[in-house]
Amino acid sequence: MVSANELFAGYLSDALGEDNAGIAIAALEEPASVSVRWNPSKLPADIHDRISDLVRVPWSEYGMMLDSRPVFTLDPLFHAGCYYVQDSSAMYPGYLLRSVIGAVELPSAVRVLDLCAAPGGKTTDAAASLRSAFGDGFLLVSNEVVRSRASVLASNVAVWGDPCVAVCSADPAGFGNLKGFFDIVLADVPCSGEGMFRKDEEAVAQWSADNVAYCAARQKRIIADVWPALSEGGYLIYSTCTFNRFENDDNVRWISDNLGAEIIYPEKETLPPGVLATEYGCCLVPGLVKGEGQYCAVLKKTAPQPRMDRTGRPPRQEPSSGAVQDFFTVPVSVSDKNGLLKAVPSAIAAEMSYAEDKLKMISSGCAAFTRKGRDLVPHPDLALNIRFRKEACPAAETDRNTALKFLHRDSLALHDMEKGYVLICHDGMPLGFVKNLGNRCNSLMPPERRIRMDVE
Image (cartoon, rainbow, N blue to C red; front, top):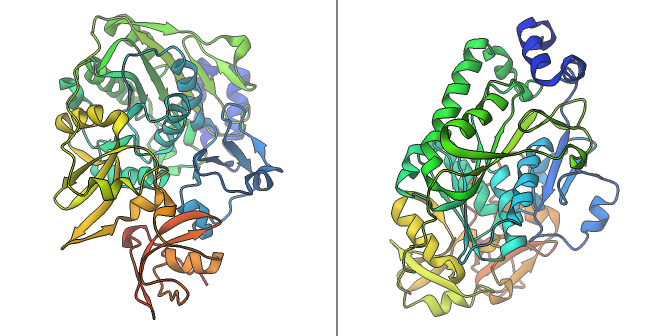
């Protein structure tokens, strides 16, 4: 058990103090909490009824604690991107992002990098916060170096549905040719995972002093590699899900001393209840908060690195752009990538185009249509996008059972609907498309996103 590891207990006491370490060790033996964060762009009509009895996460306006863990897979609103299942402590970097957004005053769209982003919790949180502050005037590049995890990230981003987000899979050093491009970098760096011990038995088994030292060195390399991409005066939000000072405060001090940054110290009197101030950042500790372990710090870059003002030109508008525009609530720039028509809000088309030229993107903007001969077939991601104008096509409002059958890719019949492409909705929330043939429907639900468990 965790409590039997004296070395770990010593590291914990060193980082948190003996009393708090004891509270954490006791809490790590208890069941993990469950929380979700609502998508402010996809709030269901009965949202107040849904959350009236829930406890709010103190540092997240849309974060809610649940009494137990429901079967999220059997909730159509989960598949519609109405909420994201995320540990409450993991919402804290988003809180810090919102604290620095107010200091960002730029002549063009703000550019943010989520460096170690999979599976997408912090990216979706950041997207919601940036949208609240800047509307469509932001570009969020969400990166994951492990390709298999990057595919999961891209899917989760598509379901969340923000067209100002792009997903790539690059080593941190790959951002070196984007010098001064980003105004904010979120770096939830790989760590020894002490804060996740009650959720991840493998993290417990792999923990050792050598692994802590390896992680601390790896974190320094990651930040040093990406550092040129952050503009002078830009902000780094550094976070881990571990407790020891080697991966946390010591690394923050190293970044400040060796790379050139001012540490933005947390104001202890303004910290939410249960959040501990450390020497250079803050720590969320199970037992003091309901969630898992999380460390966060904020640094402002002082090393010379002019902000890159030069960006690319918006891609040439395709002949079909007028037809595609009808399906969006804001002006979009439309490009054709090998038969895939992609739409990007015009407000950030230049920034998105430049990032696509420099990085190998897995996805960007909104995949809207695919060409099939002379026809345009709606892409599944279009239905989930927050800028999709659902009045642009016929829609079928379905009950829960029918919605689950659609998500399971079961056969549907819509006898009362006209033939052609039909939007499937539940509680007013779009889920995806079918092609109604009259006696049956062909599903456009991607096989990789379908529900695999029994829905009966």
